Length: 307
Image 1 (cartoon, rainbow, N blue to C red):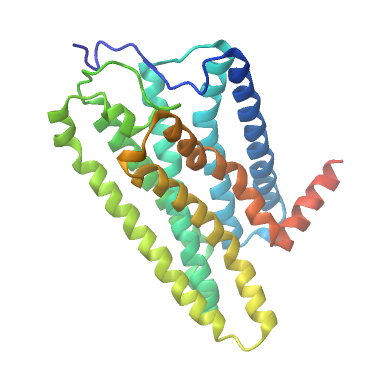
Image 2: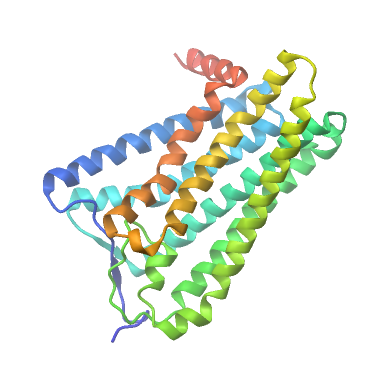
């Protein structure tokens, strides 16, 4: 019987067992990674360099793009390297580091999305108080709180997960190190004693979700009271990208964690995990750019200047 101290490495779930499919997986993930790097990199550079985008909304968008990059660079490169080298192994330390950074970036991203909902609420429902409630110092404090809370959540849950005795082998049923598949390797009694931390995390997640929903209920009520059609269109244009990103983030995460065990299978879990850990960081820049003329102009100016 093995435990955490005797395990030197874990075996991740492969996307394919044939060499041709492994290479297809490598090239697919490479394309997604490059798209995420390009899209988020353009948003980060544009918002940092263009003075017109030095507003709270774009400040939080810059933070979101940084977290998206961190999230995809934590999980995808190791999976690509394993497919290229036809291996499944990840070291014990590497697994712990991957779990920590994934939890850090994904938690902080969720908190940043919650703060962005508050930003949209103040901008539409309390426009006269926008400069007071969301001054530069307040924005920095809220962003720092989101990053700090994500760090604390990742630290506590990673330490909790890897303090468990592992007595069911070292095969992780996921393409990256994540809490649920690692908990399946632990002894049942230890698992039950430590599950309360996950319940606390679920409660915090639910509170943030309720806050976002309540914020948007108030936003839509305020928008529908705007007399001019142009004003309503502008308000919706400000909110719809954020709402689309939140919907993508929450829906893919809910499918991954709340799907019935009866329909669970390694291949389905693999596809679902890609949907919530790999797809959103690549798609978010596209969502934010589609209806945002200011961001399009800044990106166009940046690209034109570089050329």
